[in-house]
View 1 (spheres, rainbow, N blue to C red):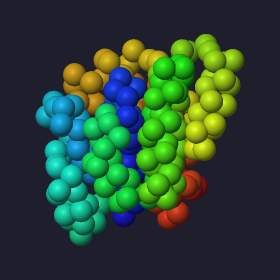
View 2 (view 1 turned 120 degrees about the vertical axis):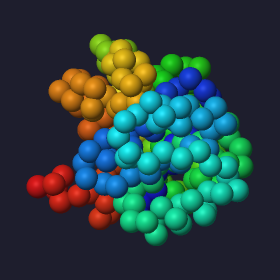
View 3 (view 1 turned 45 degrees about the horizontal axis):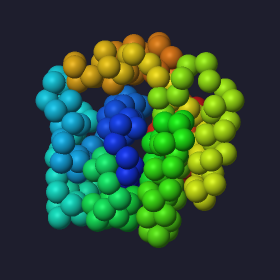
View 4 (view 1 turned 90 degrees about the vertical axis):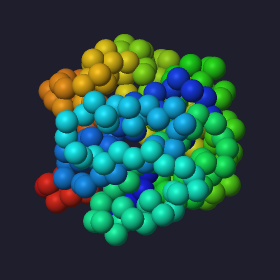
Length: 215
């Protein structure tokens, strides 16, 4: 089983939205997926309560139960676990990062958000885990802005994921139904961007990609 942890010191960067959409996209690609909600706000849990499908499995847990929950997921045949953490660079994030194969740091392409990821980057670096900054909620037509944001993010010492997620209204439209954008508008641009990010990440998780995606 592979584990992806999402971490961000600053709130409002779309961390939980990315977590649930990545979990849905992985499940649709054939990976039995769990999402553990460590965020006290339990937004991912509230989303799942509106959802009709049983998978991905979403469960609120405390940092104290993290190892037990991850071990149970692996024992129950899950292929991928996504961990959504609180918007802070605290002990919960460290614990979740240490269990991860890959850490994602979502960040809006603005100077305020880019400045805020520095502490998160330092924390993740101390764990020795592989990590990517994900440029999220970018203006649909911004190009120069993204180039500048990518350069600033790389100055933190972290790599930046190739796929960029743009600001799309479908994320807000899908949320009340407990759906991911890949379900709500499977042919839409947001779904394509999430799928591109999923495939990019799977390339960095050896043996994680299902045969259908390797074809």
